Length: 310
Image (cartoon, rainbow, N blue to C red; front, side):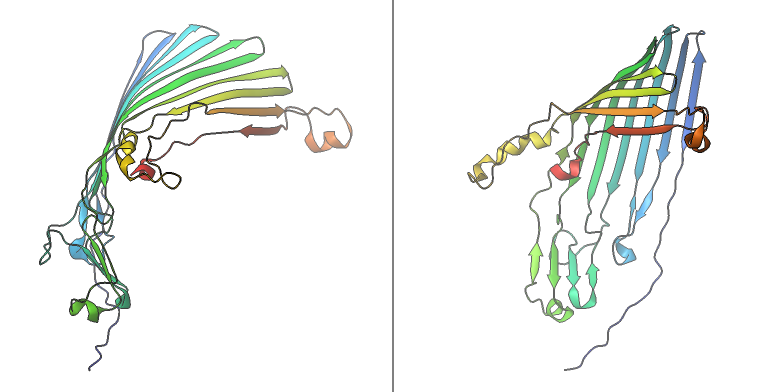
Protein backbone atom coordinates (compact mmCIF):
# COMPACT_ATOMS: atom_id res chain seq x y z
CA UNK A 1 0.00 0.00 0.00
CA UNK A 2 1.58 3.24 -1.14
CA UNK A 3 0.79 6.48 0.69
CA UNK A 4 0.25 9.40 -1.65
CA UNK A 5 1.64 12.67 -0.22
CA UNK A 6 -0.84 15.51 -0.12
CA UNK A 7 -0.55 19.21 0.60
CA UNK A 8 -1.83 22.68 -0.18
CA UNK A 9 -1.80 23.91 -3.76
CA UNK A 10 -1.93 27.62 -4.55
CA UNK A 11 -3.39 28.91 -7.81
CA UNK A 12 -4.52 32.17 -9.30
CA UNK A 13 -8.27 32.78 -9.21
CA UNK A 14 -10.33 35.54 -10.83
CA UNK A 15 -11.87 38.17 -8.60
CA UNK A 16 -13.40 41.55 -9.38
CA UNK A 17 -16.05 44.09 -8.51
CA UNK A 18 -17.63 46.44 -11.02
CA UNK A 19 -19.98 49.21 -10.02
CA UNK A 20 -21.80 52.08 -11.68
CA UNK A 21 -23.80 54.68 -9.86
CA UNK A 22 -25.98 56.83 -12.11
CA UNK A 23 -27.98 59.56 -10.35
CA UNK A 24 -30.47 61.95 -11.94
CA UNK A 25 -32.01 64.75 -9.86
CA UNK A 26 -34.71 67.23 -10.78
CA UNK A 27 -35.75 70.00 -8.36
CA UNK A 28 -38.51 72.52 -8.95
CA UNK A 29 -39.32 75.48 -6.70
CA UNK A 30 -42.94 76.10 -7.56
CA UNK A 31 -43.28 78.95 -5.08
CA UNK A 32 -41.95 80.16 -1.76
CA UNK A 33 -44.17 77.59 -0.02
CA UNK A 34 -44.02 74.60 -2.42
CA UNK A 35 -40.95 72.65 -3.50
CA UNK A 36 -40.67 69.48 -5.60
CA UNK A 37 -37.75 67.02 -5.55
CA UNK A 38 -37.31 63.94 -7.72
CA UNK A 39 -34.47 61.45 -8.03
CA UNK A 40 -33.62 58.37 -10.08
CA UNK A 41 -30.72 56.07 -9.16
CA UNK A 42 -29.43 53.21 -11.30
CA UNK A 43 -26.82 51.07 -9.55
CA UNK A 44 -25.70 47.88 -11.37
CA UNK A 45 -23.02 46.12 -9.34
CA UNK A 46 -21.90 42.78 -10.82
CA UNK A 47 -19.47 40.70 -8.78
CA UNK A 48 -17.99 37.22 -8.95
CA UNK A 49 -19.08 34.41 -6.63
CA UNK A 50 -15.75 32.96 -5.48
CA UNK A 51 -17.02 30.92 -2.52
CA UNK A 52 -16.20 27.66 -4.34
CA UNK A 53 -12.77 26.06 -3.89
CA UNK A 54 -11.82 25.83 -7.57
CA UNK A 55 -12.09 28.70 -10.09
CA UNK A 56 -13.96 26.42 -12.52
CA UNK A 57 -16.99 26.81 -10.26
CA UNK A 58 -16.79 30.59 -9.92
CA UNK A 59 -19.80 32.39 -11.42
CA UNK A 60 -20.83 35.91 -12.29
CA UNK A 61 -23.37 37.38 -9.84
CA UNK A 62 -25.46 40.08 -11.53
CA UNK A 63 -26.79 42.63 -9.04
CA UNK A 64 -29.11 45.42 -10.12
CA UNK A 65 -30.52 48.20 -7.94
CA UNK A 66 -32.89 50.99 -9.04
CA UNK A 67 -34.66 53.70 -7.11
CA UNK A 68 -37.13 56.41 -8.05
CA UNK A 69 -38.47 58.93 -5.54
CA UNK A 70 -40.60 62.06 -5.64
CA UNK A 71 -40.91 64.47 -2.70
CA UNK A 72 -43.34 67.34 -2.22
CA UNK A 73 -42.70 69.87 0.57
CA UNK A 74 -45.41 72.40 1.27
CA UNK A 75 -45.68 75.07 3.96
CA UNK A 76 -49.36 75.53 4.71
CA UNK A 77 -48.59 78.21 7.28
CA UNK A 78 -45.38 79.50 8.90
CA UNK A 79 -46.11 77.01 11.71
CA UNK A 80 -47.28 73.99 9.71
CA UNK A 81 -45.07 72.14 7.17
CA UNK A 82 -45.86 68.86 5.41
CA UNK A 83 -43.61 66.52 3.42
CA UNK A 84 -44.94 63.76 1.16
CA UNK A 85 -42.70 61.22 -0.57
CA UNK A 86 -43.48 58.52 -3.12
CA UNK A 87 -40.80 55.95 -3.92
CA UNK A 88 -40.20 52.77 -5.86
CA UNK A 89 -37.17 50.53 -5.38
CA UNK A 90 -36.18 47.39 -7.27
CA UNK A 91 -33.35 45.07 -6.27
CA UNK A 92 -32.32 41.91 -8.13
CA UNK A 93 -29.50 39.52 -7.28
CA UNK A 94 -28.85 36.04 -8.68
CA UNK A 95 -26.30 33.38 -7.65
CA UNK A 96 -26.14 30.92 -10.58
CA UNK A 97 -24.41 27.55 -10.87
CA UNK A 98 -21.87 26.95 -13.66
CA UNK A 99 -22.95 24.51 -16.35
CA UNK A 100 -20.62 21.64 -15.39
CA UNK A 101 -21.89 18.09 -15.53
CA UNK A 102 -21.27 15.27 -13.06
CA UNK A 103 -21.45 11.64 -14.26
CA UNK A 104 -24.64 9.92 -13.15
CA UNK A 105 -26.28 13.02 -11.64
CA UNK A 106 -28.43 15.76 -13.16
CA UNK A 107 -26.53 18.48 -11.26
CA UNK A 108 -23.03 18.90 -9.91
CA UNK A 109 -23.22 18.30 -6.12
CA UNK A 110 -20.88 19.37 -3.33
CA UNK A 111 -18.39 16.67 -2.31
CA UNK A 112 -16.61 17.21 1.01
CA UNK A 113 -13.32 15.35 1.62
CA UNK A 114 -12.55 15.71 5.32
CA UNK A 115 -8.93 14.51 5.24
CA UNK A 116 -8.07 17.10 2.61
CA UNK A 117 -10.24 19.83 4.08
CA UNK A 118 -11.60 20.20 0.58
CA UNK A 119 -15.05 20.84 -0.89
CA UNK A 120 -15.45 20.09 -4.59
CA UNK A 121 -18.34 21.75 -6.34
CA UNK A 122 -20.02 25.14 -6.81
CA UNK A 123 -20.84 27.58 -4.02
CA UNK A 124 -22.80 25.46 -1.54
CA UNK A 125 -25.39 28.27 -1.20
CA UNK A 126 -26.11 28.34 -4.94
CA UNK A 127 -28.34 28.50 -6.84
CA UNK A 128 -30.46 31.23 -5.31
CA UNK A 129 -32.02 34.53 -6.30
CA UNK A 130 -33.74 37.52 -4.73
CA UNK A 131 -36.09 40.02 -6.35
CA UNK A 132 -37.62 42.84 -4.34
CA UNK A 133 -40.03 45.48 -5.59
CA UNK A 134 -40.85 48.01 -2.88
CA UNK A 135 -43.57 50.65 -3.24
CA UNK A 136 -43.50 53.33 -0.54
CA UNK A 137 -45.66 56.25 0.59
CA UNK A 138 -44.36 58.53 3.35
CA UNK A 139 -46.04 61.56 4.85
CA UNK A 140 -44.70 63.55 7.80
CA UNK A 141 -45.58 66.95 9.18
CA UNK A 142 -44.25 69.49 11.67
CA UNK A 143 -46.44 71.86 13.65
CA UNK A 144 -45.02 74.53 15.95
CA UNK A 145 -47.11 76.25 18.59
CA UNK A 146 -46.12 77.91 21.85
CA UNK A 147 -43.29 75.96 23.43
CA UNK A 148 -44.05 72.80 21.43
CA UNK A 149 -42.72 71.46 18.15
CA UNK A 150 -44.84 68.45 17.22
CA UNK A 151 -43.80 66.02 14.48
CA UNK A 152 -45.90 63.12 13.24
CA UNK A 153 -45.96 60.88 10.22
CA UNK A 154 -46.60 57.51 8.59
CA UNK A 155 -44.60 55.20 6.32
CA UNK A 156 -46.45 52.52 4.32
CA UNK A 157 -44.70 49.97 2.12
CA UNK A 158 -45.94 47.27 -0.22
CA UNK A 159 -43.24 44.70 -0.95
CA UNK A 160 -43.44 42.14 -3.75
CA UNK A 161 -40.51 39.77 -3.40
CA UNK A 162 -40.17 36.35 -5.07
CA UNK A 163 -37.09 34.49 -3.86
CA UNK A 164 -35.51 31.07 -3.99
CA UNK A 165 -33.04 29.40 -1.64
CA UNK A 166 -33.14 25.67 -0.99
CA UNK A 167 -30.39 24.20 1.15
CA UNK A 168 -28.50 21.31 -0.48
CA UNK A 169 -30.65 21.58 -3.59
CA UNK A 170 -27.92 19.94 -5.70
CA UNK A 171 -26.94 17.45 -3.00
CA UNK A 172 -24.06 17.38 -0.53
CA UNK A 173 -22.00 14.26 0.23
CA UNK A 174 -19.27 14.02 2.86
CA UNK A 175 -16.46 11.44 2.96
CA UNK A 176 -14.01 11.01 5.87
CA UNK A 177 -11.18 10.54 3.37
CA UNK A 178 -10.39 10.54 -0.34
CA UNK A 179 -9.91 6.75 -0.43
CA UNK A 180 -13.57 6.06 0.40
CA UNK A 181 -14.71 8.47 -2.28
CA UNK A 182 -12.50 6.92 -4.98
CA UNK A 183 -13.77 3.43 -4.08
CA UNK A 184 -17.38 4.71 -4.19
CA UNK A 185 -18.10 3.71 -0.58
CA UNK A 186 -21.28 5.12 0.95
CA UNK A 187 -20.58 8.64 2.30
CA UNK A 188 -20.74 9.35 6.03
CA UNK A 189 -23.22 12.11 5.27
CA UNK A 190 -25.47 12.57 2.28
CA UNK A 191 -28.44 14.83 1.77
CA UNK A 192 -30.36 16.33 -1.12
CA UNK A 193 -33.48 18.42 -0.76
CA UNK A 194 -36.44 17.50 -2.95
CA UNK A 195 -38.07 20.38 -4.78
CA UNK A 196 -37.16 24.02 -5.15
CA UNK A 197 -40.42 25.95 -5.11
CA UNK A 198 -39.97 29.74 -4.86
CA UNK A 199 -40.69 31.70 -1.71
CA UNK A 200 -42.81 34.84 -1.87
CA UNK A 201 -41.97 37.51 0.69
CA UNK A 202 -44.91 39.70 -0.37
CA UNK A 203 -46.05 41.79 2.58
CA UNK A 204 -47.26 45.17 3.80
CA UNK A 205 -45.37 47.20 6.40
CA UNK A 206 -46.61 50.22 8.31
CA UNK A 207 -44.69 52.63 10.53
CA UNK A 208 -46.13 55.56 12.42
CA UNK A 209 -44.74 58.06 14.90
CA UNK A 210 -45.55 61.17 16.87
CA UNK A 211 -43.18 63.22 18.99
CA UNK A 212 -43.13 66.54 20.79
CA UNK A 213 -40.10 68.70 21.52
CA UNK A 214 -41.38 70.60 24.54
CA UNK A 215 -39.28 73.56 25.61
CA UNK A 216 -40.25 73.62 29.28
CA UNK A 217 -37.97 76.61 29.88
CA UNK A 218 -35.04 78.19 28.04
CA UNK A 219 -32.57 75.75 29.59
CA UNK A 220 -34.72 72.58 29.59
CA UNK A 221 -36.24 70.68 26.63
CA UNK A 222 -38.13 67.39 26.80
CA UNK A 223 -38.59 65.05 23.85
CA UNK A 224 -41.60 62.74 24.17
CA UNK A 225 -42.43 60.31 21.38
CA UNK A 226 -44.24 57.12 20.43
CA UNK A 227 -43.57 54.80 17.49
CA UNK A 228 -45.72 52.05 16.04
CA UNK A 229 -44.64 49.17 13.78
CA UNK A 230 -46.77 46.65 11.90
CA UNK A 231 -45.38 43.88 9.67
CA UNK A 232 -47.68 41.57 7.77
CA UNK A 233 -46.76 37.89 7.72
CA UNK A 234 -45.19 37.24 4.28
CA UNK A 235 -47.35 35.45 1.72
CA UNK A 236 -45.47 32.14 1.66
CA UNK A 237 -45.16 32.07 5.46
CA UNK A 238 -48.95 32.13 5.69
CA UNK A 239 -49.03 28.76 3.90
CA UNK A 240 -47.47 26.81 6.76
CA UNK A 241 -50.94 25.42 7.51
CA UNK A 242 -50.49 23.21 4.44
CA UNK A 243 -48.12 21.12 6.60
CA UNK A 244 -50.75 20.63 9.31
CA UNK A 245 -50.98 16.91 8.47
CA UNK A 246 -47.48 16.57 9.95
CA UNK A 247 -48.37 18.31 13.24
CA UNK A 248 -47.68 16.44 16.47
CA UNK A 249 -49.91 17.82 19.28
CA UNK A 250 -47.84 19.14 22.15
CA UNK A 251 -44.57 18.72 20.20
CA UNK A 252 -44.73 20.48 16.84
CA UNK A 253 -47.65 22.38 15.33
CA UNK A 254 -47.82 23.81 11.83
CA UNK A 255 -50.07 26.84 12.03
CA UNK A 256 -50.28 30.22 10.36
CA UNK A 257 -48.02 32.77 12.10
CA UNK A 258 -49.88 35.76 13.49
CA UNK A 259 -48.67 39.34 13.00
CA UNK A 260 -47.95 41.47 16.03
CA UNK A 261 -50.42 44.34 16.27
CA UNK A 262 -49.35 45.99 19.54
CA UNK A 263 -45.81 47.06 18.74
CA UNK A 264 -45.85 50.50 20.36
CA UNK A 265 -42.43 51.87 21.26
CA UNK A 266 -42.01 54.92 23.54
CA UNK A 267 -39.04 57.23 23.60
CA UNK A 268 -38.09 59.94 26.07
CA UNK A 269 -35.27 62.45 25.90
CA UNK A 270 -34.07 65.42 27.90
CA UNK A 271 -31.68 68.25 27.11
CA UNK A 272 -30.63 70.49 29.98
CA UNK A 273 -28.32 73.46 29.71
CA UNK A 274 -27.07 74.24 33.23
CA UNK A 275 -26.58 77.90 34.07
CA UNK A 276 -24.61 78.25 37.28
CA UNK A 277 -23.89 81.87 38.11
CA UNK A 278 -20.92 81.26 40.40
CA UNK A 279 -18.97 78.68 42.36
CA UNK A 280 -17.32 75.39 41.37
CA UNK A 281 -20.12 74.23 39.04
CA UNK A 282 -19.88 77.51 37.15
CA UNK A 283 -16.15 76.96 36.64
CA UNK A 284 -16.83 73.40 35.39
CA UNK A 285 -19.93 73.89 33.21
CA UNK A 286 -19.81 77.60 32.49
CA UNK A 287 -22.97 79.26 31.13
CA UNK A 288 -25.94 77.64 29.40
CA UNK A 289 -24.45 78.59 26.03
CA UNK A 290 -21.28 76.62 26.78
CA UNK A 291 -22.54 73.17 27.86
CA UNK A 292 -25.53 70.85 27.92
CA UNK A 293 -26.52 67.57 29.58
CA UNK A 294 -28.50 65.05 27.55
CA UNK A 295 -30.13 61.70 28.30
CA UNK A 296 -32.57 59.50 26.43
CA UNK A 297 -34.43 56.19 26.42
CA UNK A 298 -35.97 54.49 23.39
CA UNK A 299 -37.52 51.21 22.32
CA UNK A 300 -37.65 49.80 18.79
CA UNK A 301 -39.09 46.76 17.02
CA UNK A 302 -37.07 45.07 14.31
CA UNK A 303 -38.69 43.58 11.22
CA UNK A 304 -38.43 39.82 10.66
CA UNK A 305 -36.09 38.99 7.78
CA UNK A 306 -37.20 36.49 5.13
CA UNK A 307 -34.27 34.14 5.88
CA UNK A 308 -36.08 32.86 8.98
CA UNK A 309 -39.21 31.93 7.04
CA UNK A 310 -37.25 30.42 4.16
